[in-house]
Amino acid sequence: MSEERKKVLQRFKERLAHLESGAIAGPAHWHLFHLHNALNALPDDHSAADLHLDEFDRADLAKEFPEMEADRPPTASEIRTRFDMLAGGLL
Image (cartoon, rainbow, N blue to C red; front, side, top):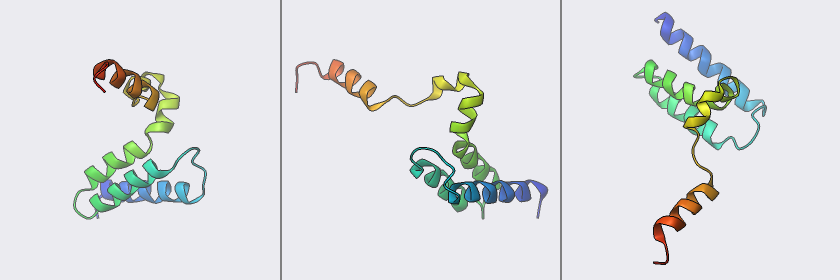
């Protein structure tokens, strides 16, 4: 087994343990989603699995690197405001 693949497997194992411990604040469904996608990618493409693990870590990385805030998704309120402006009085 290649060293890169071993690193990805170890990283996956650590993220799974972190998720199982309940240490993740807020909703964990996105973490589960990215971990599931990483698991699906592991057998065929450890690079793709690594990318899914990057997404798993995104919230923690955003705390360290505030410039990632620009990549954050809009809130429901922001989406509602934009939709209301687009829809105008049509609905």
